[in-house]
Amino acid sequence: MTYIPFLAAEGIVDSLVESAQRTGETFGFNPWLFFSQIVSFVIVAAILQQFAYKPILKVLEERRKKIADGLANAEKIKQQLAESEKRHQEILTKANADAQRMIDEARASAQALSDKKAQQAISEAEQIIAKAHEAARIEREKMFTDLKREVGRLVISTTAKVTGKVLSDDDQRRLSEEASREVAA
Image (cartoon, rainbow, N blue to C red; front, side, top):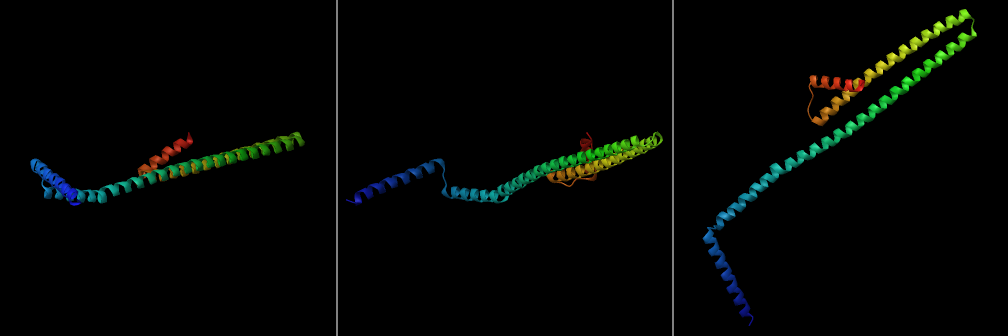
């Protein structure tokens, strides 16, 4: 009894194999050709995986990191520029306060003196004011020049990092001038 289902199953398997062989012969199926195509496909897929897909993913990942670094550097430059502007304003405020204090002291002492001495004190105070203003103007110009140079250097450095190339002297000069114009505005 146990052999009957086995024999029946064997007959079904034989008919399926025979049907598959007839279909293969009808459509021109060649098992060796099919196997060789599978092997060729696997070899090409492995070569593409190794030499095309992985390097492309690596390049894309490196590019993403460079862009992220460039954005971080740009944010840092913005913060440094804001700090420089703040220091610049503090120095100007202090210089103006000092100049105003000097003016007030000169006027107070001028009132206490006689008319002749008052005129002499006012003259000296005006000279001090002129010198203080000149010193403040020179200091401001020096700081502004330093700020332009630093911003230009940071822009050139960031641009070189973001673009991933070495900038020529003309490119560096052009970027530095553009940064100076932006800071001056």
